Length: 166
Image (cartoon, rainbow, N blue to C red):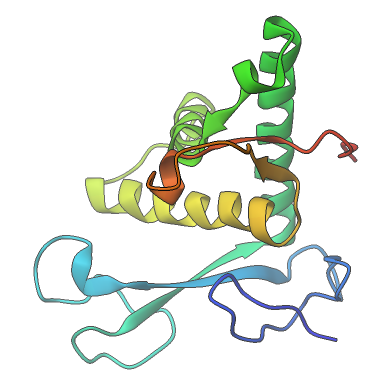
């Protein structure tokens, strides 16, 4: 059985258990973003898989190894916050704070972003990783009793208490 992408369309490379079909270089996460909204201009920012029409969708991909690296980094970071604060709610962060942490981690580990557009592109890719951690793999859980009018990126998430880092 093939898995689903974050946008609900079928994808190749994932069994229903979330493990890759082949080697660790297979693409496991595919998301589409509107390329016209990135820079505020009307030209597509680059076309990785689709037509070159205005308003086309750009396909973003990530390997299973990269996904595991980022998800393990998030779990370790949130668990260390949990140990320091002795509370699940105190260790929780919003999705946008997790993306910000991952971007800072990438900059600190030697990744340099060539432009603001490449920084935005990487932020979108990391947002897809965090969304998959919540929706598909259920590594992260949204904390209950939050204001329902909060945007999705501002709601607090924490590591699922039963998740074992592998």
